[in-house]
Amino acid sequence: MTAPHRLVVKIRSDWQIGPFWVYRDEEAVPEPYLPEEISEVLPLEPELIAEIEAWDVSFQNTFRPDDPAESGFQDARQIQEFDARGRLLAHKVKAAIPADVTVRYVPLAGDGTEEITG
Image 1: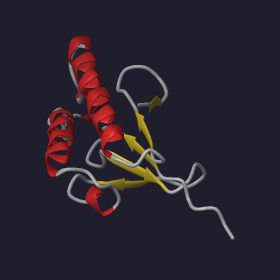
Image 2: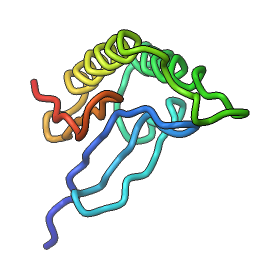
Image 3: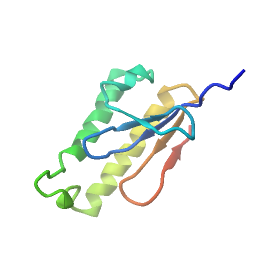
Image 4: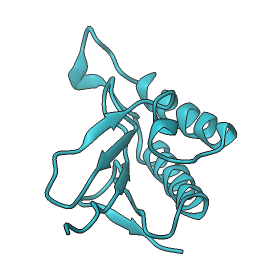
């Protein structure tokens, strides 16, 4: 009998994709999910999904297709506020889903991924 796949959800903003990235186990390539798709995988309330979508849209709105290198938030304060909101939303997701699902947040500032606990 094989062990069930462990579900890992990463919350991150990236241009024109995401903000949910779902792994079936640690070795798998993640699948991106849009807000309107994530309920296929996670039992999230529509209100929380809408909050995450609004957060992601605030990032997507900084994209400049005519000058991608100039895309993004223009100052450190905006990035810090965006990341603080993203962390808060990641904690809300963790509280809303089964305990055996791992939630991670990828901030814009800094390197790496933050595992969300409790």
